[in-house]
Length: 382
Ligand code: GLA
Image 1 (cartoon, rainbow, N blue to C red):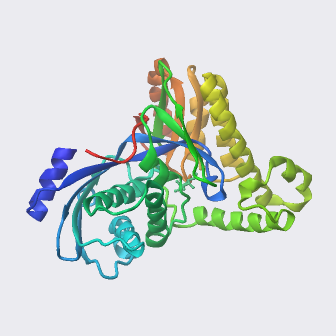
Image 2 (image 1 turned 90 degrees about the horizontal axis):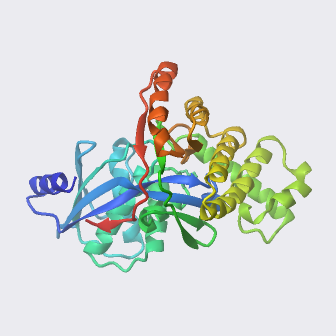
Image 3 (image 1 turned 45 degrees about the vertical axis):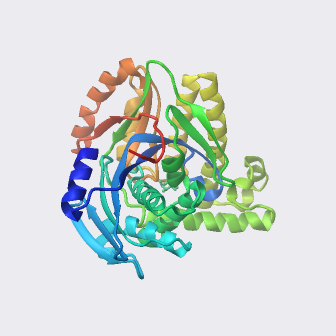
């Protein structure tokens, strides 16, 4: 990957890169749609992600080539703005603009981007682009930006340049992921803890349903609006609450008459999901993989029935996994409406699991893809 990146950079810009950077994609093990509600999440950085080569130019220009989209464009650094007709360039442009808005001087950069993450599969390819480019620019020009600042700037770039009103989870894990661990992150104060993920003979398989999801359009942002409504209701009962997650399942029970229908279901998902993340951390530490698996199934059900972000293909994949001996648990991962499932299983069951996917092809006419989730480090120079 690096050789291809360096060769293409040199060909296009007639200059070798100053250095190359890798930023990982992620799965979320549990804690879904809780990040923008001040809740708990538990993502893992992958060994797949986005690769960036960078060299400085003194022209006050940002030049970007994307090997995967087979595109090239150049932009003046004065007034970088999103362009809906060239979505491929919005993430890299967005993070550079956010750095500028923070007061960082960016004299000019030539950038080549490639990657090995499926795009639009819910494994955070866009966060990985923002983090890789942001980190490369920060390092190149010695910018005074902390890891947490960088995460917030990448999130802002996503909001303003792609229109997806994402939370902070994807950017945090892509920056701060750590080998052989999951990160338990509290999105209220960004405190985090690494939880070892080392179980011999056990793996996590990612199954890409190949139903493409697009968070910028529609339902993801609808969920955010619903959550804003819920928060307003909570504030009338508890004016100290800073986020939905400051409300408890107990308080919810006491005020049941207050929340109805859809909003009741959304709130139930968020609060019960926070509970599941806490329990998950304990079960992982105890090495109780059956309990871990049950929590994955419960989380999926809640996403399917209460938060309503699943789809028939994802439900099929989870149901199917649950019937295979040696599988502990499975759930959809990420924003939903397509994308991937994760399956925790004994390595000895992998073959049977993969063979069972033939039926998915028959059912939906789509060939799914399967990858192993390897818990890896966050953004780094390579
Ligand atoms: C997407 C967003 C994240 C998070 C998840 C759902 O991946 O980018 O911030 O909200 O959906 O958990």
